[in-house]
Amino acid sequence: MTGYTATVTVRLKQGVLDPEAETTKRALERLGFELEGLRSADRFEVDVDASDADEAEERASEMAERLLANPTIHDYEVAVSER
Image (cartoon, rainbow, N blue to C red):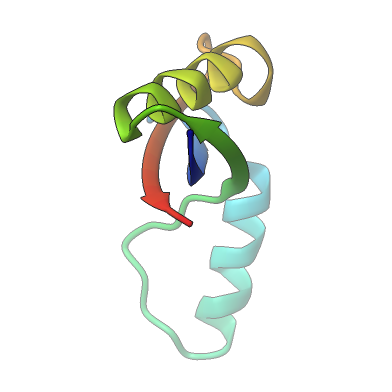
């Protein structure tokens, strides 16, 4: 078994209201930054032991689908690197 770190990034789907991002966007614009858009995201780093990177990604995807993200309103991405 090899140790991997799976990074799971969870974002609201396009079109779902994101009040945290809207508040942050307005604050940045008041500070003089010009933005076309802003989305908030949560990032989880999960350390797993797996036989290969594909297995680590599969396990992290299952974690995302079962707990870390709500597939109805969230999109997620999984990136895996060896520890």
